[in-house]
Length: 441
Ligand code: ADE
Image 1 (cartoon, rainbow, N blue to C red):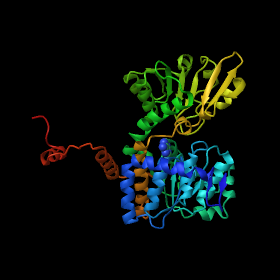
Image 2 (cartoon, helix red, strand yellow; image 1 turned 120 degrees about the vertical axis):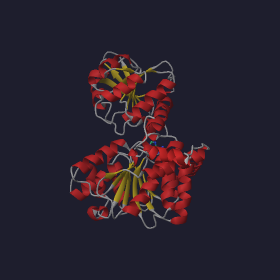
Image 3 (spheres, rainbow, N blue to C red; image 1 turned 135 degrees about the vertical axis):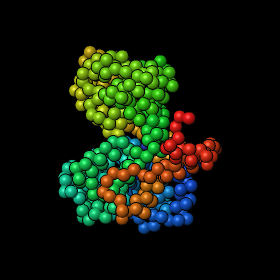
Image 4 (cartoon, rainbow, N blue to C red; image 1 turned 45 degrees about the vertical axis):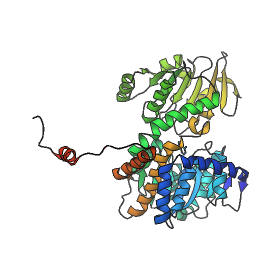
């Protein structure tokens, strides 16, 4: 482990060169971020702004960090999951002078100590993926003490002072936005948050398309199995689950959807998926993928009915969707098949295989969403930080969404980079769309 004067905490600085080459590869595929970076470098809209970011430390995240720095921001970075850090990328960023605190395989204590170290910059803005950083700031300022907060505070001289200058934050993911909306509804939100997740240019692409591909990528990298012909049970038919179900069908899987919302279940049924409850699905699936944001979605009653050899994977933010406690309790033996596969052996001889310790399979077993999709999400993140700086005096302490013009701008730039032409409306067509008196003629 490398720790240099408290300025970074990474696995191995010797990995920096490999990380730099992978970041350069991602940059090729993130043209919108790069054009924002060029503008930022000229205009310096983030001059002197201190930003603490808690994100999956990937090559795409490095592109965002460098974009913010080009705009004049000073950035600290910690990981948003104990297993998702790409150690070569963390080393590369550290080698370029970024205060990065992240390594793959952190203990819970180290995870929160890294959050504390990222906060030591005395941030003005927080960037989060899953709300662990933002909720730590809120717990410190509201005087709530739990294990995580005491570990984070333990590395800070004066935790309250450290956190008291934050005037805005952003949130990347559905789970985080839900946590922050709950803070807002209890009247406890202390600064405005931009829910980047809720921008159309994020949720329509990153959630279904990015996750759809990267989750299957994770399962394939972890197991090397053939997907064609497998019965795949997808729990949750939200933005993420629907993307996974669609991609799995494209790979020749027989997809079964489990979903509690009647409208979403109907959407899944009308998209041609078999829809049923987990009780029934447990008996037929070969591969189970959770994407619900909820707890204990697959639990003892389901494990007891599963076939020998099933594979269990989670795509949700936290490792709570597949009950690891029930799995362990039902097992007479637990063995590591590889870094990414844990075998649970039941007393009747059945074996169940859990991938990536039930954590986000796409980020732990693969590299997360592809750069082309993160180009959209992280362009929005960069613009959200600029928006917070420019509007800090007038934004209420609420969860906000970015103005639609920012979405349109990002989408336009992406289309241009793809060489895709947009239709232009004639003046007559624009006028027609504004007119309310016209109807049947
Ligand atoms: N979330 C999902 N994929 C990601 C990636 N490639 N980088 C950062 N965060 C992500």
